[in-house]
Picture 1: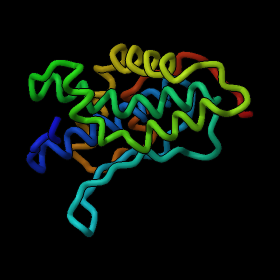
Picture 2: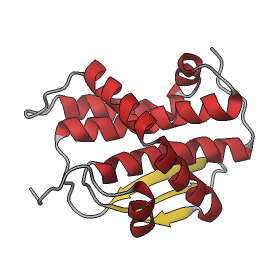
Picture 3: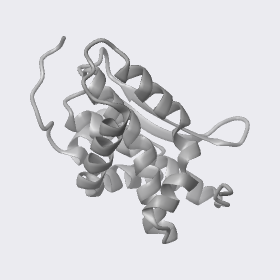
Picture 4: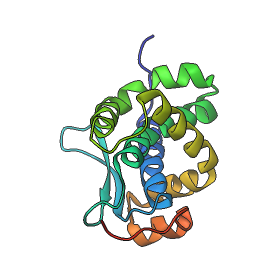
Length: 167
């Protein structure tokens, strides 16, 4: 399947939803986000990043799920904005998550991981679907402002599902 032919605004939107998915799933799992942003690089392409605040509070399973949440956010955006089926959207937006998938595999190969890659993928898909309204809210802030500080992400994402202490 060929890559999607997207306008600049659509590229920004797909990346905003991708980064918002990372950020919301991280916050809901109890981790801290410093900021999340999407901007045009000097080379003209768009880049996005979810920046963690300090040392991570997540274990390898949670990290894998949060990594895989980004590509799922991209796919769900494509289903809504472009009217694609979810399967086709996952294939068409897979390029946005190549590094995330590699990171997830790495996290799952760590000593304390309990999930397999298919289990982590299903968990990410379920969590992104369940948090979609929060993810869309964060993505809209990214699109409006370019960068969203962590306190705003936390306010839009809602409280963590579990409380955590530093490891």
